[in-house]
Image (tube, rainbow, N blue to C red; front, side, top):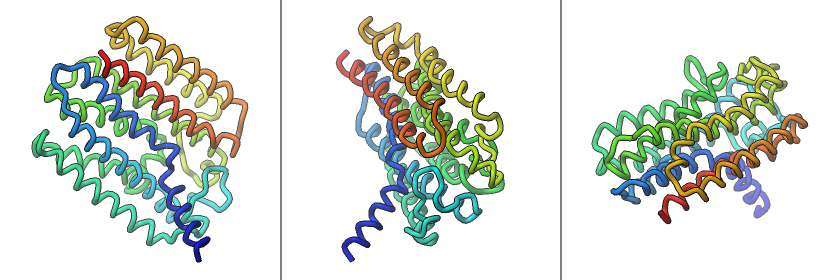
Length: 297
């Protein structure tokens, strides 16, 4: 009984896809860093935004697992990380209930932010919830029509960074904030690119048209590489406003990013699984160092 319970817990932890959660965390931390550079900075709404972002990503991950199973897009023994519903570790009903429950909790957290942002935040929250579901289901699932990466840029970069910055500072986002939001979104999209690069053969077999399936291995490899460099380029004006020593951060990030690229293009299938977490970790490392620099200034 104890072993069965342990396996169930492990299955649910796997379903949250912890290795990808740095994507949602990095967006809010980037907004916190930019807010620290502002004369007015409130951390409570930032913490609530962080919690909201994590919950929404977990709900999106749960929904993706449920709807991909329901629509026959997953198969047992796939190259990717184990899918609890497909493998029989978690019932489809339990996954659907968990998806709804996490979304409800996220909405409650989001409502708390009205105190700092006003009722217009409800529209933002509804849009994010719809986006979390539209990634995997609906009349035109984004992940199945080559729009997954764009969704990541919008919902893990542009929306959280600009919204969190406004809530923490009561100031409209400036050019640096907007540029950073796109940059972090591109870094987050790279995590999905590795995922879809690994799954090209499986996705093609079931008719799932990701960018990797549409353009193939070579093209998507280039997208991964250049996304990292474009992300850093977008933030050059911000780095130029910081102490010279801070320039070491983008340089180190690009070194890590390029190293990962050369490792990724030499691998296929299950051998790529660790590189999802490594790509997400590099993104989080970059943003954390930015936060530290901004906080000590």
